[in-house]
Image (cartoon, rainbow over all chains, first blue to last red):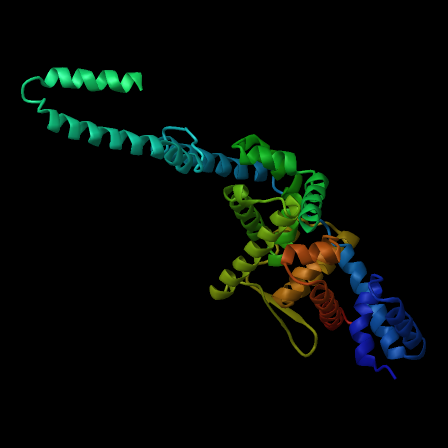
Length: 146
Length: 209
């Protein structure tokens, strides 16, 4: 047997048809035989009517302008910060840096190895003190030719 | 498949959102696009704040602050829900914060209903109703509206917000769940309690409803 307390909890949802079919039937059956719950339901209906009749208020005439003035002020502030702290608007994707390092690493390694080999040859041939210009030019030519 | 359905769902949300074009423009730095959004939502924002706080001036302040907060964080809006849902969530939260501030500074409307059912109101009085002094039936209606608003303001915060969103603003249960980030069952139980509490309050003030 359903008691009035359970029905009372369901009445506000019965009002806008939000109950399941079974609960709806139970409420309808109960309302037929319980004047107390029927009165509570009538009061809920009147309350709903009062709430629905509440007048919508209008924004004051200055409302939008005032909001937009604040928004534009905020936007200018943001632009100023960007101008001073991020003057160069160059966007470099983060992925480029590791890719660049990976690509350049073998060349850097071989270049270093070659340079050390050249250094060793330079010392063993005894060149250097006598003809530094020649050896530098020679290195340059070697580099260009690959 | 789940990934695909997520993409389709989010695309549906974006397609169904009539504001998205202007939101994207705002995200790219177009301030004028925000004006369109203000124009579209200002009345609803103000009315939500008004029914939550019960005061016209407070509602104006709260909704302005909510719009500005929305603008400041519009880049964080991911279009997972409708823009309006996101915006109304902000105004509800700002209204709740304002009520807390008013509570702490004792400026809030204090309603006490004594045994004879007579209501005493102190503090802020609804500005919009004072300004209108219409005779006869209109006056009676205004008085009744003031009584209803006072009862709404006397409700607990969690009941007030669902009542305002459902019975005054006409949002669906699902939309209310999205705005307040609460499950459907919680929305229903809160609405049920809110309506019963409002009915009891009005019956006490007005007498025979």
